[in-house]
Length: 136
Image (tube, rainbow, N blue to C red):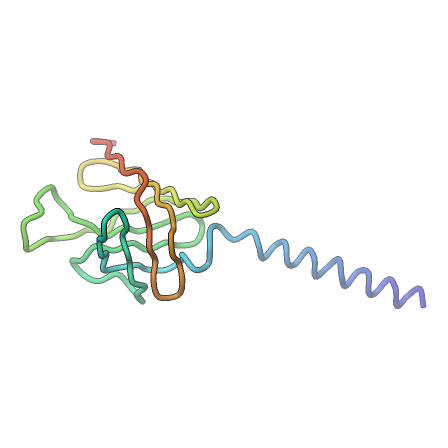
C-alpha cells in the first residue's frame, strides 16, 4: 500500500513539474505566427493571420524566444512601387500589452500594442506607442 501511495505521489509531482515547464513559453501561443494586411479603423489596426509574410507587403511575424520579423518599407520613400525588407527585432508580452523593438531603414523603433482581439484568424490592436530612433 505504501508503494502504491509513493508511486502516485511521484506521478503527481512529475506531472506538476511537466506542466510548469510547458507554461514557460513566452507570450501567447495565439500571437505566434505571421500577421498581414493591416486594416486601419479609427485607433485600431486589424491584422489577418497568414502562413507566411507576403512579398513587398507589410507584415509581422512573432517567433518563439522573443524574436520577431517585421517586413516593411526598405527606404524612406512611400510612393509605389514599394520595396520592402525584413527587419529583426525582439518582443515581450505582459497581460494584453505587447512591446517590441525592431530595426527599420533609418534606425530602430519601439512599439507598444494593446491587444483588443486575438484568435486563430484575427489580431486587433490599439497602438499605444510608436517611437522611431534614427541611426541606432
